[in-house]
Length: 237
Image (cartoon, rainbow, N blue to C red; front, side):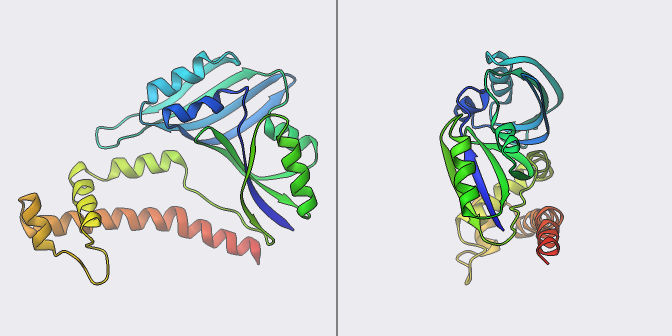
């Protein structure tokens, strides 16, 4: 078996124009009925309202419901969950793939104007056939390829947004400065005292911010990366 991650730029869809707004998205659910497409998607963007307006005003979109809208003073990117109903003149990428008998793994995502999907194939000939199928709607890229079952788990964009909200502006400032000056390198290029002097705070304050930030980040990794990697190994076995 072969697993591959393919990215397609669906030229007739609003997704192809989302790169201009630095939009990232995860599809939570996706369905097609006749010539209508229904999608439940979580979007994140620096200019979230502009991104939502892009979706709402695209010629193929007939209805947009904003189910959740989250913007935080501590996060540069906001997130929203949208239920999008649209019409199409030709079958969208996932329908083309399923009609041809291909098996998507998980739900697609949206990145830099490209719809990204993981697929399971019998062999490389099937991969070539899937690529040719997707080229009917736009350019196609093969982002990764493995001759064993492999699922590239990524955190949900809403979870990433919650992570940035969990880190205070001061924690982010201290963490960014520590990374910039090589605090986490071996050997360290800067001390806690030197970071504190640059920030004009006590060394204990810097130490507390770094400890709390690292605890938040480690918990996120355990919840969303380690657990996913463990599930991947279980499937592979």
